[in-house]
Length: 50
Image (cartoon, rainbow, N blue to C red; front, side):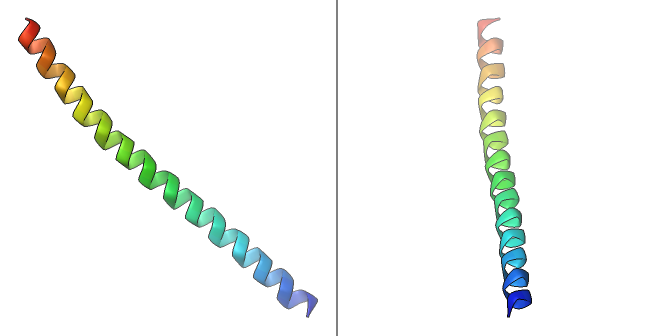
């Protein structure tokens, strides 16, 4: 019984870590898209200023 429990705990932790990494990856990708949009706007503003 003890070995079954430890395997479940290990699998649970692995899933949590994978989920966390995937979540962070999605957030980073989302912010990169926002950053690209912002940088495009900034470039357009600089062109208008010139």
